[in-house]
Length: 462
Ligand code: F0G
Image (cartoon, rainbow, N blue to C red; front, top):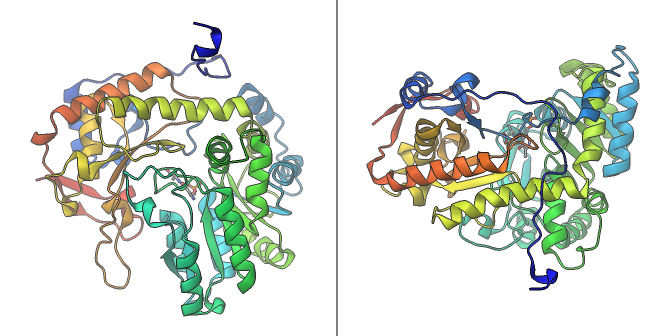
């Protein structure tokens, strides 16, 4: 065989300098812990968890450069040097003009929603995200889902399931009138769809159409680098382009963005609001003082802003993003080999189990995904998260559960934290639960919080 035919593997583009020891528990320990947590993985103590795939949010391993940046924190109340580094990193890598730091993504969502949304407004978007939709609703708006239909089908292998159904959106604009639509909310690497990307051609088309009606586009850019990687790999004409240029082109079709830097940007805390319109920026500068802090720190320490500035640059590195997605795909492909039903194509930040297919005998009102997350934890101490009926919540008008098409368990991979061997352990645990799936019984909710119920709800086994 010539070398042309030998598969070349990716490997982590870093080596490990410090390690954090893990706790390994017994099955009896885990049964006790999950019962105490009301069968909600959010309520488990971290010390009771072995491999933590609850979220990729704030769980990244920072680089030595980021840690040394933390030592250069300028903790001045006003005009911290680190703020200007952050501003420069956003302008250089994303191209947005004005930047307002916030304590995390939802801080930016709050300010943006308060400024742009009036009671009675409609905010179309490519699938909801929990905190984003809630801030829209608290500002008096209503979210309207305009993602393509395929996004709601876990088995459809269309490569850009984050795309917007342009025709559906235009019909909505015509029906409600553009005055009632303050902006279109566009997420890259759509979280709730399974980390599915939006294509550049869809974004271009969207920009053209919204320009006709004078409607803004606000970008939830939490996982924009992951989206850019899929464009590079799967969309015609991008294979030779640099990730950083693809990221910048994506941003160029939008008018502003909210960012949870806890994901792509490789930090443990932080976010920002970025906007090109000076008037909106000025209003946001006023509001940030009320909810977050002065406009040059927005709820963050100087050192946090420095870590974000460095993290943004690392996030668009070619080798980083290839290894990042490579690891997620490695886990996903193992699941596929075992015949476990997952959302396809494999997304950017995790592997999503299709709980409706995994546990077809459990009714959606008995929370199959919540049940499955608890069972995987009991089997191995691997912590995952429900993204189905519990996360989706209730319609505020009717009080009825939304009962979403997607009833999923998310195995979210933190960036630069776990090894391929950890992925093997995870896949084998899910396989073991899958083999015993017929014996698994559903759950009944016994405590339901008013907002974002998935974080704190409690359940009982049927
Ligand atoms: N937008 C998206 C797409 C998100 O995934 C998140 C957070 C936010 C906004 C809110 O940002 O947490 O910094 O306030 N997602 C986390 C997750 C919580 O686990 O998916 P935040």
